[in-house]
Length: 238
Ligand code: SF4
Image (cartoon, rainbow, N blue to C red):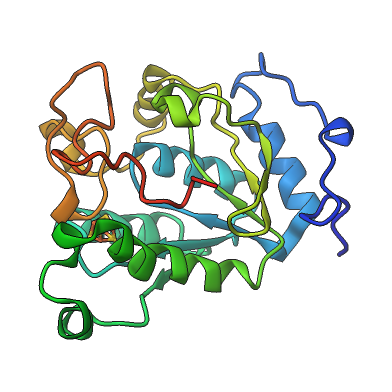
């Protein structure tokens, strides 16, 4: 299969148009197109937050054997690992890779000092998230992400299909028009499993070392890197 839209020839003017007013606000249509366009060169980088659960369910409808990667930084909540086990049982044909960084936590501490996430969180994210995803995406032409426009200012201009300069790839975001309520409505209606931390004040869940309960009900990502200027791990910044 040869993809027509690649990083090298990306052109905003020739992108397909999807129905934003469909039942899934374009998500299922985008996923069908992406599956046909990229086949096994499409990878979903899933964090298994509630958006990730919804997108996994939609993706499994389109391709029950789709490829998913989870960036296993070694410092996720136990609840997150439990959820992934549930997802593996619910969708046994999905390929879910637990991608580890090159350095163990001990090797990282030995090289850069203890608790690098406190002393230099950007370096820590680079070692434990960005480099592993770079390795994974070197085998793919496009990747899926569960970004929604309403999540933050930095995500407000996200399109369904994006030229991703950071990873020199095509980043596809089927949920851009979904609201927080849309996501939960879909998850409950379809009886999807989800991280129980969501019920305890954690709307956005990342590494346990850098995630707290949200401090601002209007900012769903306000529990991430509390007390720091950082708002993104860097996967979605160019
Ligand atoms: S979120 Fe925190 S612990 Fe996780 S990779 Fe980034 S800095 Fe490190």
